[in-house]
Image 1 (spheres, rainbow, N blue to C red):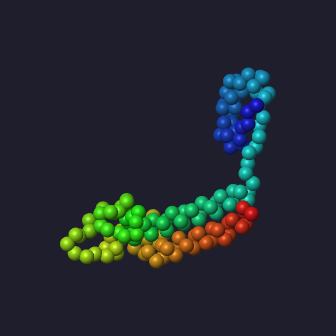
Image 2: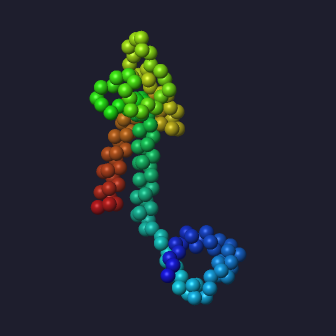
Image 3: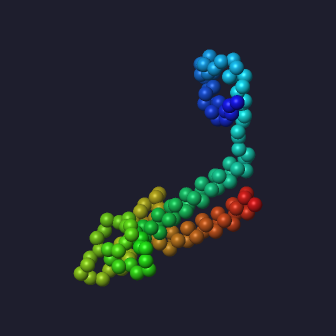
Length: 144
């Protein structure tokens, strides 16, 4: 027994030549044992996945904006220079004077980061908004 989804059938049998070759390659007994099952997802599942895609895109883009404002990650609470776990910047901070974290900030364009151009506050707002809306709209509606 073989289950063939509809989208695969549409790809295979798009032309009559493919259909003819497919039937020639299979013996009569195998062709009779094939069960064609149309594995389409319901519309509500498709819509829920589309909404998930939108919110995950918002989360990733706003997360990039937050990461661009604070491009170094530390394991501990204190942030001694040179003790970062990973850094996402190539900037070298001076060792002979004090500096602030705003000097480390990277500038990403608006098509990568949401909202882009060194805007940590709005990046955090979009990140929080995405999580709240995702959890309050999508999960109670579709996954209850």
